[in-house]
Length: 296
Picture 1: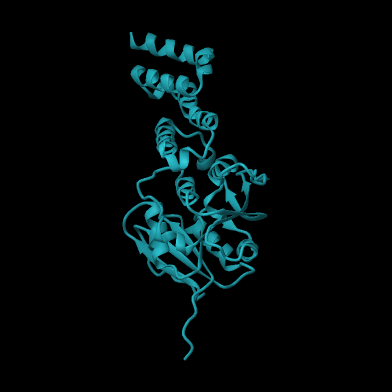
Picture 2: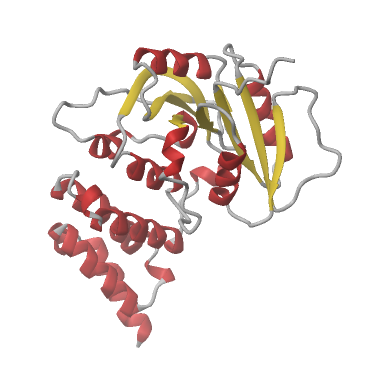
């Protein structure tokens, strides 16, 4: 009897309470041109009863601890593929996703690294916009390039060797993909394709403006990353300040009513630290004055 051969790709979909969208995501994987893969669907916390798929390539597992990164890590531990891909349950892969990644992997002789393709954004009104592709400049470290271009979860494929050193951090509440990729790129190379292979589907929830608590989490995640020498030293100082200044600016301009006067001054100081032009923005002074008057 011939022993069962491991698949070339594993595709992992973490999911929680989105059965309708999940079905669409699963179908997009099963329609791939390249068929040597397994699909691991990780139900986070609750698993619906009587759910099964006729396709033998589909595995269903359950992760009882809540959190998308915990579910992804559970899928990684279950996976058998030489390369591991990821798909969010509310997005879809185009039929060429795995075949384009296979071409890219073969082109680079299967070297362990982070492989990525391009994505299309589809908005609630049906509008589709393609992600712009730009080649990495020779003097740009891959980590800096990642921040410049943006690499989403659905576009990435990782050699399984990487998981001996890196897994998704279950304590990270936002920017979970970027947090993983930058850590991987401290040790492994980046390989890119200019092929469009997946669609990021914007829902009403995903295009709504985040509130204060979400921006605060983003600021902390990226501040902590930039403080790590193996990451922060690869990115120009001015770029890091530009990146971090966005969050105090958005909070002070759009969410000042959600914070106390003391918090307002803390975020104003942070803005000035990253971008001294914050001293010249009249809108922020108006919001500050309103906070002072309301406090009285």
